[in-house]
Length: 76
Image (tube, rainbow, N blue to C red):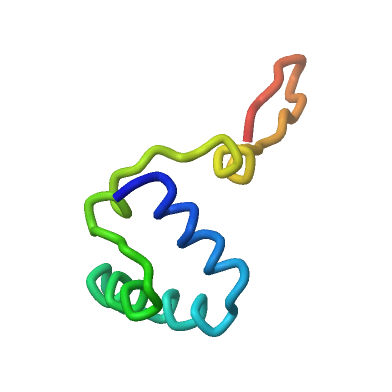
């Protein structure tokens, strides 16, 4: 599966709340792939399980805070 297929999935999830609800309600990876395929997307399990995060995704999960503690910062 290509990077463009993943981008298509992300775009569809953002644009179509009904599709997003069906996709997220899937109880297994195979079920999620079946929902996507029923909506015209081509996905495979390997790509969904083992793909690197993109720059935008990394920005979304990056975070933390530095809390001063006895003169030293502690990251939380």
